[in-house]
Length: 236
Ligand code: ADP
Ligand code: MG
Image (cartoon, rainbow, N blue to C red; front, side):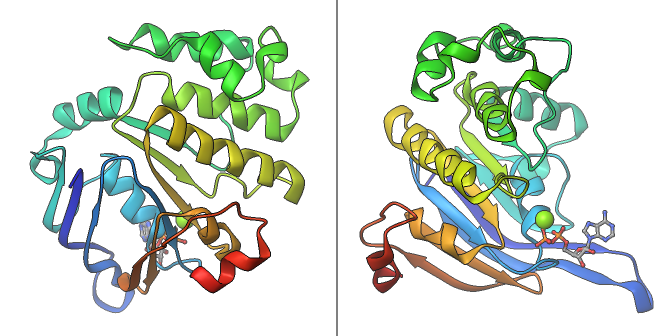
Protein backbone atom coordinates (compact mmCIF):
# COMPACT_ATOMS: atom_id res chain seq x y z
CA UNK A 1 0.00 0.00 0.00
CA UNK A 2 1.41 3.38 -0.96
CA UNK A 3 -0.93 5.51 1.15
CA UNK A 4 -2.70 4.59 4.38
CA UNK A 5 -5.16 6.88 6.11
CA UNK A 6 -6.46 5.66 9.45
CA UNK A 7 -9.19 7.29 11.51
CA UNK A 8 -8.23 10.75 10.30
CA UNK A 9 -10.01 13.64 11.98
CA UNK A 10 -9.87 17.32 11.17
CA UNK A 11 -12.18 19.77 12.87
CA UNK A 12 -12.61 23.48 12.27
CA UNK A 13 -14.13 25.94 14.70
CA UNK A 14 -15.66 24.99 18.02
CA UNK A 15 -18.94 24.93 19.91
CA UNK A 16 -21.83 25.92 17.71
CA UNK A 17 -19.51 26.51 14.74
CA UNK A 18 -17.68 23.18 15.00
CA UNK A 19 -17.26 21.50 11.60
CA UNK A 20 -16.09 17.92 11.42
CA UNK A 21 -14.43 18.28 8.03
CA UNK A 22 -12.90 14.81 8.43
CA UNK A 23 -14.71 12.63 10.91
CA UNK A 24 -12.75 9.38 11.13
CA UNK A 25 -11.65 8.74 7.57
CA UNK A 26 -9.80 5.53 6.71
CA UNK A 27 -8.70 4.50 3.25
CA UNK A 28 -5.72 3.18 1.38
CA UNK A 29 -4.29 3.82 -2.05
CA UNK A 30 -2.19 1.36 -4.02
CA UNK A 31 0.86 2.41 -5.92
CA UNK A 32 -0.16 3.32 -9.48
CA UNK A 33 -3.84 3.58 -8.65
CA UNK A 34 -6.16 6.26 -10.01
CA UNK A 35 -8.53 7.13 -7.20
CA UNK A 36 -11.53 9.39 -7.59
CA UNK A 37 -12.63 11.07 -4.37
CA UNK A 38 -16.27 11.90 -4.84
CA UNK A 39 -18.67 13.93 -2.73
CA UNK A 40 -20.92 16.95 -2.58
CA UNK A 41 -19.63 20.39 -1.79
CA UNK A 42 -18.60 20.57 1.86
CA UNK A 43 -18.16 16.81 2.28
CA UNK A 44 -14.47 17.15 3.17
CA UNK A 45 -12.78 16.30 -0.13
CA UNK A 46 -10.42 19.25 -0.29
CA UNK A 47 -9.60 18.85 3.37
CA UNK A 48 -8.59 15.24 2.79
CA UNK A 49 -6.61 16.17 -0.32
CA UNK A 50 -4.79 18.90 1.58
CA UNK A 51 -3.87 16.45 4.33
CA UNK A 52 -2.61 13.87 1.79
CA UNK A 53 -0.58 16.62 0.15
CA UNK A 54 0.94 17.85 3.38
CA UNK A 55 -0.61 21.32 3.13
CA UNK A 56 -2.02 20.92 6.60
CA UNK A 57 -2.16 18.35 9.37
CA UNK A 58 -4.94 16.18 10.75
CA UNK A 59 -5.96 16.61 14.40
CA UNK A 60 -5.80 12.88 15.11
CA UNK A 61 -5.38 9.62 13.27
CA UNK A 62 -2.62 8.54 10.96
CA UNK A 63 -1.47 9.20 7.41
CA UNK A 64 1.46 7.28 5.96
CA UNK A 65 2.84 7.72 2.45
CA UNK A 66 5.44 5.22 1.26
CA UNK A 67 5.85 4.14 4.91
CA UNK A 68 6.57 7.69 6.07
CA UNK A 69 4.20 8.87 8.75
CA UNK A 70 3.50 12.32 7.35
CA UNK A 71 0.84 13.01 9.98
CA UNK A 72 3.72 13.33 12.47
CA UNK A 73 5.66 15.79 10.33
CA UNK A 74 6.38 19.35 11.39
CA UNK A 75 6.20 22.33 9.07
CA UNK A 76 9.69 21.95 7.61
CA UNK A 77 9.27 18.24 6.96
CA UNK A 78 5.91 18.88 5.32
CA UNK A 79 7.47 21.48 3.06
CA UNK A 80 10.12 19.00 2.00
CA UNK A 81 7.50 16.28 1.56
CA UNK A 82 5.40 18.51 -0.69
CA UNK A 83 8.39 19.58 -2.72
CA UNK A 84 9.68 16.09 -3.34
CA UNK A 85 6.63 13.93 -3.38
CA UNK A 86 3.46 15.81 -4.29
CA UNK A 87 2.16 17.31 -7.52
CA UNK A 88 -0.91 19.53 -7.18
CA UNK A 89 -3.39 20.54 -9.86
CA UNK A 90 -6.17 22.93 -8.84
CA UNK A 91 -9.25 24.28 -10.56
CA UNK A 92 -7.43 27.48 -11.50
CA UNK A 93 -4.15 26.86 -13.21
CA UNK A 94 -1.94 29.27 -11.27
CA UNK A 95 0.70 29.45 -13.98
CA UNK A 96 3.30 32.19 -13.69
CA UNK A 97 2.08 34.77 -16.17
CA UNK A 98 5.44 36.11 -17.34
CA UNK A 99 6.92 32.67 -18.00
CA UNK A 100 6.22 30.60 -21.09
CA UNK A 101 4.52 27.21 -20.85
CA UNK A 102 7.91 25.52 -21.07
CA UNK A 103 9.48 27.80 -18.48
CA UNK A 104 6.62 27.19 -16.06
CA UNK A 105 7.44 23.49 -16.17
CA UNK A 106 11.20 24.08 -16.23
CA UNK A 107 11.00 25.88 -12.88
CA UNK A 108 9.50 22.77 -11.29
CA UNK A 109 11.98 20.47 -13.06
CA UNK A 110 14.94 22.54 -11.83
CA UNK A 111 14.18 21.89 -8.17
CA UNK A 112 13.77 18.16 -8.75
CA UNK A 113 16.48 15.54 -8.51
CA UNK A 114 15.19 13.25 -11.21
CA UNK A 115 12.66 15.03 -13.41
CA UNK A 116 10.86 13.58 -16.39
CA UNK A 117 12.01 15.00 -19.70
CA UNK A 118 9.86 18.06 -20.35
CA UNK A 119 9.76 17.29 -24.05
CA UNK A 120 8.32 13.86 -23.34
CA UNK A 121 5.62 15.31 -21.11
CA UNK A 122 4.71 18.04 -23.59
CA UNK A 123 4.37 15.40 -26.29
CA UNK A 124 2.24 13.16 -24.06
CA UNK A 125 0.00 16.09 -23.15
CA UNK A 126 -0.30 17.35 -26.72
CA UNK A 127 1.16 20.78 -25.95
CA UNK A 128 4.53 20.56 -27.72
CA UNK A 129 3.45 23.28 -30.18
CA UNK A 130 2.48 25.60 -27.34
CA UNK A 131 5.70 25.51 -25.38
CA UNK A 132 6.77 29.08 -26.22
CA UNK A 133 3.40 30.63 -25.46
CA UNK A 134 2.59 32.61 -22.37
CA UNK A 135 -0.39 31.58 -20.21
CA UNK A 136 -2.60 34.39 -21.54
CA UNK A 137 -2.08 32.99 -25.05
CA UNK A 138 -3.52 29.61 -24.02
CA UNK A 139 -7.08 28.39 -23.53
CA UNK A 140 -8.18 27.14 -20.13
CA UNK A 141 -7.79 23.52 -21.18
CA UNK A 142 -4.32 24.20 -22.59
CA UNK A 143 -3.28 26.00 -19.41
CA UNK A 144 -4.50 23.06 -17.36
CA UNK A 145 -2.40 20.70 -19.47
CA UNK A 146 0.65 22.85 -18.74
CA UNK A 147 -0.28 22.80 -15.05
CA UNK A 148 -0.43 18.99 -15.19
CA UNK A 149 3.03 18.87 -16.79
CA UNK A 150 4.32 21.17 -14.07
CA UNK A 151 2.77 18.98 -11.36
CA UNK A 152 4.23 15.71 -12.60
CA UNK A 153 7.62 16.73 -14.00
CA UNK A 154 9.28 15.98 -10.65
CA UNK A 155 7.97 12.37 -10.70
CA UNK A 156 5.75 12.90 -7.68
CA UNK A 157 4.78 10.01 -5.46
CA UNK A 158 1.25 11.42 -5.57
CA UNK A 159 -0.55 13.56 -8.14
CA UNK A 160 -3.43 15.36 -6.41
CA UNK A 161 -6.04 17.07 -8.58
CA UNK A 162 -8.79 19.15 -6.92
CA UNK A 163 -11.76 19.90 -9.21
CA UNK A 164 -9.29 20.20 -12.06
CA UNK A 165 -11.99 20.47 -14.71
CA UNK A 166 -14.22 22.80 -12.69
CA UNK A 167 -13.48 25.82 -14.85
CA UNK A 168 -13.49 24.02 -18.21
CA UNK A 169 -16.16 23.43 -20.84
CA UNK A 170 -17.15 19.78 -21.15
CA UNK A 171 -15.04 19.10 -24.24
CA UNK A 172 -11.83 20.51 -22.75
CA UNK A 173 -12.67 18.75 -19.50
CA UNK A 174 -12.85 15.43 -21.32
CA UNK A 175 -9.51 16.03 -23.02
CA UNK A 176 -7.86 16.92 -19.70
CA UNK A 177 -9.33 13.87 -17.93
CA UNK A 178 -8.24 11.53 -20.70
CA UNK A 179 -4.74 12.97 -20.43
CA UNK A 180 -4.63 12.49 -16.67
CA UNK A 181 -5.67 8.88 -17.22
CA UNK A 182 -2.86 8.47 -19.75
CA UNK A 183 -0.30 10.05 -17.47
CA UNK A 184 -1.42 7.71 -14.70
CA UNK A 185 -1.08 4.68 -16.96
CA UNK A 186 1.96 5.56 -19.07
CA UNK A 187 4.05 7.29 -16.40
CA UNK A 188 2.76 5.23 -13.46
CA UNK A 189 1.92 8.26 -11.34
CA UNK A 190 -0.44 7.43 -8.48
CA UNK A 191 -3.30 9.89 -8.86
CA UNK A 192 -6.15 11.24 -6.76
CA UNK A 193 -8.88 13.21 -8.51
CA UNK A 194 -11.18 15.16 -6.23
CA UNK A 195 -14.57 15.99 -7.73
CA UNK A 196 -18.27 16.47 -7.08
CA UNK A 197 -18.98 15.17 -10.61
CA UNK A 198 -20.12 11.54 -10.58
CA UNK A 199 -19.36 11.14 -14.29
CA UNK A 200 -15.67 11.49 -13.56
CA UNK A 201 -15.80 8.41 -11.32
CA UNK A 202 -16.08 6.30 -14.46
CA UNK A 203 -12.37 6.72 -15.17
CA UNK A 204 -11.23 5.51 -11.75
CA UNK A 205 -9.60 2.32 -10.53
CA UNK A 206 -11.14 3.07 -7.16
CA UNK A 207 -13.95 5.39 -6.12
CA UNK A 208 -14.18 6.70 -2.56
CA UNK A 209 -17.25 8.71 -1.61
CA UNK A 210 -17.23 11.18 1.25
CA UNK A 211 -20.27 12.60 3.03
CA UNK A 212 -20.08 14.91 6.04
CA UNK A 213 -16.45 14.00 6.61
CA UNK A 214 -17.03 10.25 6.51
CA UNK A 215 -16.32 7.63 3.87
CA UNK A 216 -19.69 6.30 2.74
CA UNK A 217 -18.42 3.98 0.01
CA UNK A 218 -15.13 2.65 -1.24
CA UNK A 219 -15.17 0.42 -4.30
CA UNK A 220 -12.71 -0.89 -6.81
CA UNK A 221 -13.89 -0.63 -10.38
CA UNK A 222 -13.25 -3.81 -12.34
CA UNK A 223 -12.74 -2.29 -15.76
CA UNK A 224 -12.03 1.39 -15.76
CA UNK A 225 -13.09 2.94 -19.00
CA UNK A 226 -13.06 6.27 -20.66
CA UNK A 227 -15.42 8.72 -19.01
CA UNK A 228 -17.55 9.03 -22.13
CA UNK A 229 -18.34 5.32 -22.34
CA UNK A 230 -22.07 5.00 -21.65
CA UNK A 231 -21.75 1.34 -20.73
CA UNK A 232 -19.30 2.13 -17.99
CA UNK A 233 -22.05 3.01 -15.54
CA UNK A 234 -22.86 -0.69 -15.18
CA UNK A 235 -19.41 -1.27 -13.75
CA UNK A 236 -19.74 1.23 -10.96
P1 ADP B 1 -15.26 19.93 -0.20
O1 ADP B 1 -13.91 20.07 -0.82
O2 ADP B 1 -15.81 18.54 -0.25
O3 ADP B 1 -16.25 20.91 -0.77
P2 ADP B 1 -14.00 20.97 2.19
O4 ADP B 1 -13.01 19.94 2.58
O5 ADP B 1 -13.50 22.18 1.50
O6 ADP B 1 -15.17 20.27 1.35
O7 ADP B 1 -14.78 21.44 3.49
C1 ADP B 1 -15.36 20.54 4.41
C2 ADP B 1 -16.01 21.34 5.53
O8 ADP B 1 -14.99 21.97 6.31
C3 ADP B 1 -16.92 22.46 5.04
O9 ADP B 1 -18.00 22.57 5.94
C4 ADP B 1 -16.04 23.67 5.10
O10 ADP B 1 -16.78 24.83 5.29
C5 ADP B 1 -15.17 23.37 6.30
N1 ADP B 1 -13.83 23.97 6.19
C6 ADP B 1 -12.87 23.65 5.28
N2 ADP B 1 -11.76 24.35 5.48
C7 ADP B 1 -12.01 25.18 6.54
C8 ADP B 1 -11.24 26.17 7.24
N3 ADP B 1 -10.00 26.45 6.89
N4 ADP B 1 -11.85 26.78 8.27
C9 ADP B 1 -13.10 26.49 8.65
N5 ADP B 1 -13.86 25.58 8.03
C10 ADP B 1 -13.34 24.93 6.99
MG1 MG C 1 -13.29 21.28 -2.36
